Image (cartoon, rainbow, N blue to C red; front, side):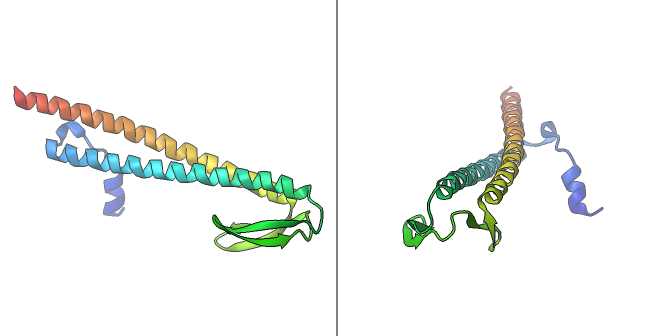
Length: 151
């Protein structure tokens, strides 16, 4: 085993740490919790975009061939377009790969990606809850140690 994996498996005993070390551990946990919150926000944003895409697919499916629409290139730039075949859409599979799918196939893809996002949200939120519990324990130990120094 490498030294890295051994150190990752080692459990920290907070009562044996100095106040300075506890303070560093507390700061590390606070930073990790902030990063987990950013990840959670990002995942919820992605879930919202997929939900919006699924809704738009339902709207496009009811449109007639030749209807005009505005296609977003980014959040503030749109170009005019026409519906050529309302039953076919181009979907991004990831990392710049695209394919043509029928609307039910595209909806199925969105639902699978949404399930994957939900699973990731559960994992990140669970990790965040554990980090918050650890942070609370670290704070309590720091208070205990400071009270011991005052005696």
